[in-house]
Length: 88
Image (tube, rainbow, N blue to C red; front, top):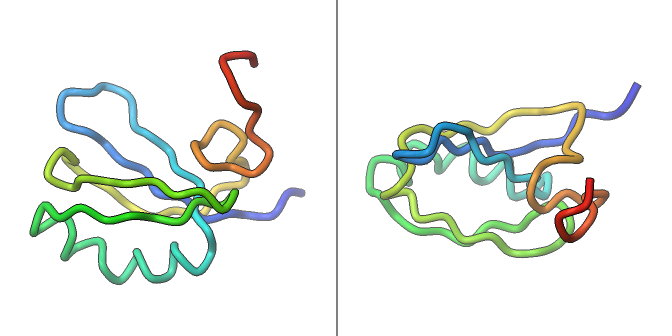
């Protein structure tokens, strides 16, 4: 059984499918406590992804968001094991 990894799920205004971002474990803990404030203020923040990259989110364009633990982050942006490019 694979280990669970933290991720951010963003539902953007006007977009039908959610966006999944694999987060660094420390980033996920910090974000979980700040998420309500960021959603309320429409602020912008820079997040550290699981692969060590950076991902900017402008919460003014986010309809709803939550941090979750997922068994598979292979399709999430910023996942360490996600292939590059458009191949599947």
